[in-house]
Image 1 (cartoon, rainbow, N blue to C red):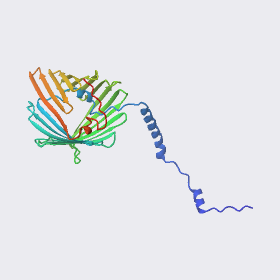
Image 2 (image 1 turned 30 degrees about the vertical axis):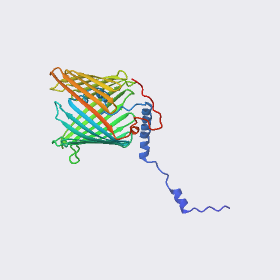
Image 3 (image 1 turned 180 degrees about the vertical axis):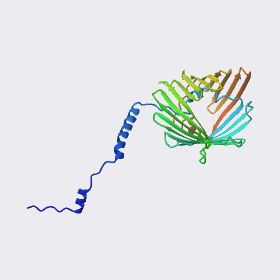
Image 4 (image 1 turned 135 degrees about the horizontal axis):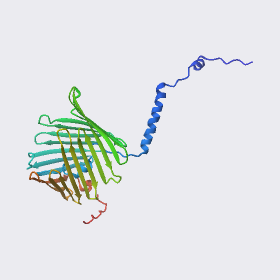
Amino acid sequence: MSVPTPVTADALSTQLQPAPVPSSSSSSSWPVGSLYNRFAAWRKSLDLPNPGTVENLTKESKQTLLNNYVFDGAKADLSKSLSMNPMFQVTHSFHLGSQTSPPTYHFGAMFANDKLFMHGNVDHDGNLTARFNHGWSATNVSKVQAQLSTQAGQSYVQLEHDYQGSDYSLNAKAVNPSPVDMSGIYMGSYLQSITKNLALGLETVLQRQAPGLSDVSLAYLAKYTSTDRNWIASAQVQGPGILQASYWQKLSEKVDVAAELQVVAAPGRRDALATLAARYELRMASFRAQLDSTGKVSAFLEQRFAPTFAFLVSGEIDHFKNAAKVGVGVMIESSSLTPEEMGMVPPPGVPSVPMPQP
């Protein structure tokens, strides 16, 4: 006759413990997570490229157009590199004899390494501008830009953050934000690759001058890049009735052209401006020419006689106003580094390779 095994208190409590019941939150979130994973896998299978930032939507055409290059009078930029890694450089800039601006002097300093970029500039009137960029990772960059001016209403601070996804880009920006009444200018943009060639986006701007007084505007963005990246077309539509379109094409290794169209069809104002430009890159020189619908013809030449010396010539003729502007300038770069550190000559013991003759 067998003797029954005694039941302990621990065993009895284990037998009487109720079976675990799956939580409603986990059961309800499981289909959502599965759907998101399927969508992410399908999105990754498309292998869409990153469309770039909204700020660089027309980067290629801006490098060809003369809007950021033409000047008048005489200018000189003297820079000196004190270090290469990390990079540290100082600059002295002079601008004299301009028809549109008084003589100016600027002193600038720049520091950069793998994660940081800092640039400061001060002029002879005491106006200070500064930029600070910090890369948290290859896809996250925070930016701060500020200006302290001696003129009332010209000082500002701008906070910005960029995030680059695999096939999209996000940007958030705030200009003169006030934590007290939330006044300021707030901007946000999103650019998404739809196909390997087409990207669409949206940009919104909130201007909050005072509590209860705000204005919101939207802009719709589009960018199309050819498969071989030899031409890029972009467009930006703002309400009401503002259109800006640009086209850039690389004709050869040395020649590229760009066209830009700006149309304003707002109530009470109708205006349009068309611009066509071309750039020709030589071995030691770069030449740009531009023509717009207002009758202005512009040209800009940058001739480098040495890697550290460049001569600039700029000219603009306005046929409708019968006016002309001419500018000349020099760019001189000097360094306290040795030729080996600058990479100009190989270090001792390494045979030099003869340079090809032109």
